[in-house]
Image: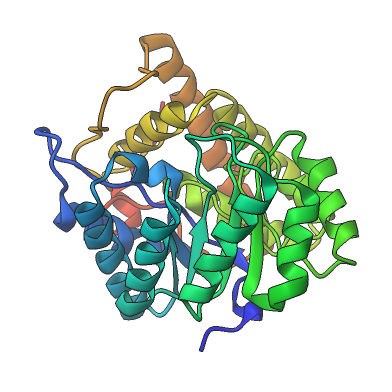
Length: 329
């Protein structure tokens, strides 16, 4: 049985690969997950940037099974997003995730309707009753939906204890994180969920981990390790280009498009296809700035590894050989 203490470190949210025809590519997904496993992470996550809102129920469960199988094979944790517009569907996803071997589930609240707080509370309590797994309460209101109240989140923790964790993304992230910490007397186990843009500030406020995109998980692993070592000089050097990159992703669709572009650049995915309709498209100048920041991020991470002597996996291409890395000019 997975314990609350196991949920600590870097848990990348993987991207769902599609072929040029827009159909799910499960073989490419398994290849991506195998690559992620070489980057020093503690687990993987099926989440919003996995394009769950553009998957059918059947596809979502297929992706969950592949993710849980890969996690089992590599010996790390799998967290599966189960949020839905109805309680019955969310409960179904939670039960299917547990059956597939998930280590935990994560749920956003319904987004289509402005629900009263008691309805949101009942929604989460039904998910918690449907599974024995830890449940991560995700407030994704930084880009979709409405913010969850601190009082609701604290009440869930008071009722269910360590089975409940949190991924707060409501603005302002730092002050709300501290408010949740204070409302729960420091018991709340919280993941940073802004792609790493708020990681240093969130770390100082007591988070247990972070859920970045898979594309830069190697850099976030280095950043997390620098924080754990108390090497804040390296932390800020790594964070500077990372924050610049995340700053170029102002919406959920932007995260999807940029992360798939960078996974393709690193030869992890053979196609950067995302399902439409999309509200964001890369233009030439944005792509060039991403490439410049990506190269700077590589240099910052390499410098940290050299100084720290950390036995971290270098940024590698899809075949996991360091000598095949394609460096940005």
